Amino acid sequence: MSGQQIVLKPAARKLSVGINSPNAILVRLSDYSVLLDKNSKERVYPASLTKMMTAVVAIENLPNLDEKIVLPTSMFKPLYQADASLAGFQGEEEVSARDLLYGALLPSGAECCLGLAEKAAGSEESFVKLMNQKAKQLGMSSTHFANTTGLHNENHYTTVQDLAVLLSYALKNNTFRQIFTTEEYNTAPTNKHADGVAFVSTMFQKLKSNEISGGKILGGKTGFTNEAGLCLASLAQKNGKEYILVTAGAKGNHATEQYHLEDAKKIYNAF
Image 1 (cartoon, rainbow, N blue to C red):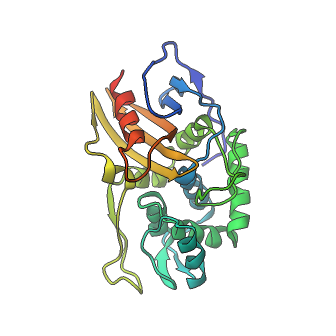
Image 2 (image 1 turned 135 degrees about the vertical axis):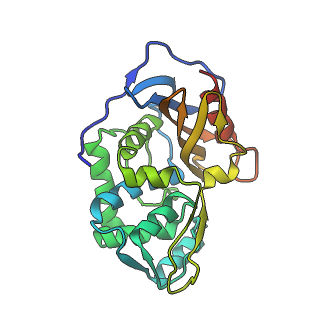
């Protein structure tokens, strides 16, 4: 994938929809026109939406996605302590890079992000440099990454506009698109799990129905930290065209109403 910049442009007619999320942007992928813009240039915390960039950089820097990666036991303790979301792998488990990508994007597994980062760049720190280089290359000028997982860090921030640029770019990659639009996936058997590990997309798991008027929601990535609120990046097809929506900062948490999903349904149904 080349590093060409995607330039978003305002649509002739803008949508006005009352939503929970303080930040939102809706983009038509055929011409990158922005149909809805709510504080899209305001700094937000991306939480697990970060993992979209982690996946892109891993895909572009790992020549063989079927190569096995060993997840060291030492990786897990800090993740448990940080209450990071995990995909279900164990210490010393041998997993293909491809299965780690599914684990990063579907159940939002932090151990998958670290495994990919260490394989691709030698360390998480070096991999984060690649993430920031990629952001710069894509013109994501209001973004800075400090880790691969989206765990809260004051120095780890973006805007929903920058994330829309990232997702527009990422969806041009077949591997990313395939994973992003998967509802359920089972990994290959590993040395720790004879039947592999079963994943369900955190978005599809909570979405009561992916139907919208004139189409359906095809895929997405959720995010949540106390500081970031409920966040969602999604892809939908409606009346034969594809759209992406990125929202951030909705009030609530895993136990409340899923306001980010409500916003997505409301926006996709509004035009």
